[in-house]
Length: 130
Image 1 (cartoon, rainbow, N blue to C red):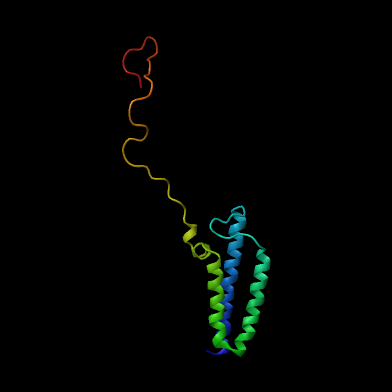
Image 2 (image 1 turned 90 degrees about the horizontal axis):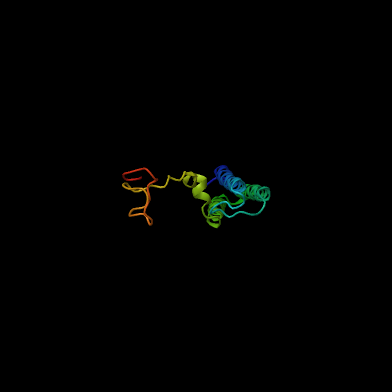
C-alpha cells in the first residue's frame, strides 16, 4: 500500500471516528444526559480534539509505515465502537426506529366477568341498565 492510499484511509477512519463522537455528544445532550444505552459523560469538544490530533499523528505515520497505520486506524474506530455499546447501531440507524404502538389482542377489551357490585337502576326506570 502506498502512502497516498494510507493517508486517505486514515482520513476516512478519523472522519468516521469524529462523526461517532459528535453523534454520541448530540444524543447524550438531547436525552437529558442519559443517552439511552450510550455512555454519556466527558467533553465532546475534548474528544474531538484528541481524535483530530490522533488523525494528524496517523497521517504522519502513514509516510513511514503505511502498511501498519491502516489496520491501526480501523482498530481505533472499532475499539471506540466496542467501548460505547449501542453507539454504532444508533449511528447507522437501528436505534432511531420509532416504537410500534402497543398491540391489543382481538376480542373483548376490558374486564371480563360480572361486576363486583350489582348496579341498581335509578328510580322509575325499568329494564336492564348498562
